[in-house]
Length: 226
Image 1: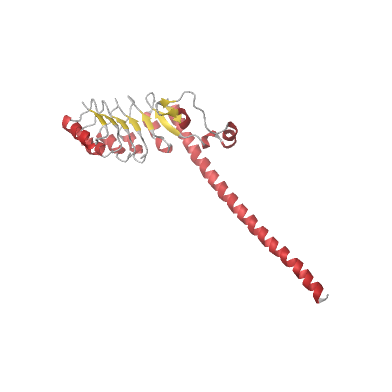
Image 2: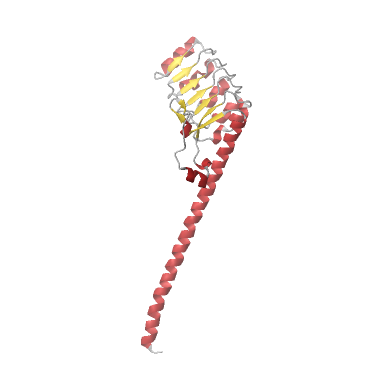
């Protein structure tokens, strides 16, 4: 083979090899990205399933759970519909998009079992447990739930021990402890909830002095006392 022919063959072969290497790198990158997306989707689906299971437990116990599209500033929205198109919810599963933002535990049979599921609802903002059989021990699961905005524990057996679990709820705006066993011992915890706008302590064991101090500690909050 002459030198000219050999050079021509090498010239044609070199780009082909370069193209092959580029294609292999692109394919590897595509597989890597696909694997990352697949891993993310699997994790997201697992978390969504855990949220769905938690919601099912609350519903089975007689509680009510409201998604973000079923809840407004004034409470439940009767005709609320998901924002996502129906075909997308069918394709990926509605639980991938549903966000539970409010629960009503007033008619729940086993309140402790229902409350135990609440930390699995990361978007939860509203808890109504008026008159329910809530125990101080069950409220321990609320400690890490720092984004709560509305909690009603009126007419329950909650005491100072239960109130202590709300110490980290920095975003809490509405708290009702009316007709509970809460006493002056809870004043420091309540005074630390600086975002409160409504605090109902009627029918509790807090003294007039403690309520007066709370009113001073929370100048932007309406404090309802004895």
